[in-house]
Image (cartoon, rainbow, N blue to C red; front, side, top):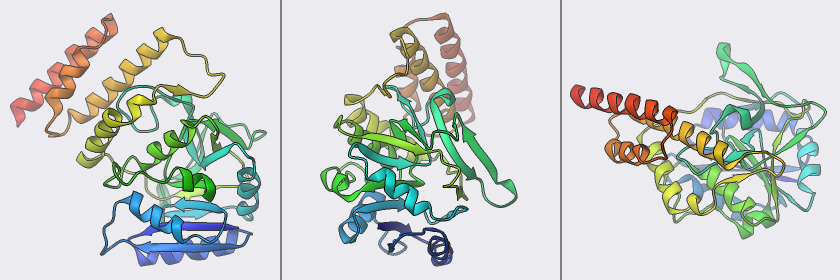
Length: 295
């Protein structure tokens, strides 16, 4: 029995996804769609309000721009959610999150996903490190396009409305809250019997950069780094991948007119020395100066 919670801004998409769920889910369900066009509530408030209204023991927070290509997927998800230590289940996620500015994906080597991505003629099957013999793969953080969780877990760890004041970072924050308890494990569904399509890949904007930096500083750095048990990562490699991740984040943000670019560059320059880092410092400093001249 699933309560499906949707933050809606498109009546047409809501109608399409509702019809698709009805045709494919295979279990008793309800859809709690909150029209956020006029309210413009932060996503955390929308999801918490939807969860409070939920009548069923299993929750599914999902975007309205998705489509299921499998039947009876609700049965498979409910069976997994019944496991006492099951936390959040998503369709893409990472086995590692290090202490550096980013979303849930920091390096492709730790990415696990099985879904159709893109929509229309651009749709591609994204299958990362999955084995069809293993329908669920443990991760630390999941993508927010779709997240299953038991209502009792949400009751203890609702979306943080105090800090999540926009429409970004809710997936990482929710994931880290749940695994920080050390009572639950998060998963990516890798089952060929649960195939979902996500029509929009998402985009990075000022709001995403701002929220990501703020969440890392105020909250996530107290939890990170985290990794799935069994993932081998030495302290040396951890520092190396943190530097690489920060470098990619900085390279991206320096292409914009984000107001705190200088502060982030200074922070990056203070990373422990390595020849690789020196090269990154020179490249990022050049990018900053070049952008400053243009502006």
